[in-house]
Image (tube, rainbow, N blue to C red; front, side):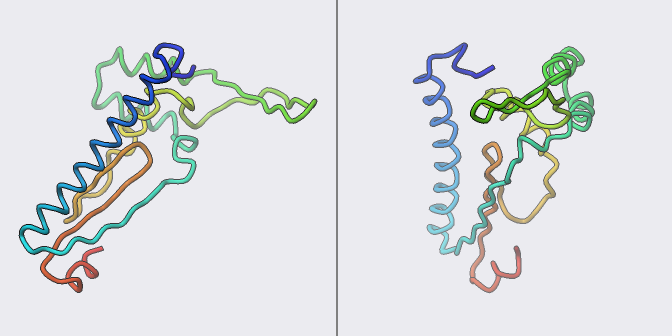
Length: 151
């Protein structure tokens, strides 16, 4: 179900824009604070391809069971269970297929579930800025050579 079924489209875009703006502002502040301390900043930007499509349901539910209340884990399990899809191309339609991996596309909850699923990123010296399947790893140091050795 698309999030606009519950919220007007302008509100959905407003919430998403505010979340993205907050991450961009946090990264900008990190860079500016480093600049004030005469630090160089290096950054790597990652966009995980098909990230939502590859979430392993069993693994997600296991992680949720360790960190979230039982009722929430059960609710997510019901959301992911028995999902099916088919493809329409022109006048042709494929047979129904079971969807064993992935999160519902367009769902606001999908972003939250993906963040919970991927929150096991390793601890690094750099600072992580994460929004959905976009990740920025930024690091600061006195010299560029120091940054190059850190990534």
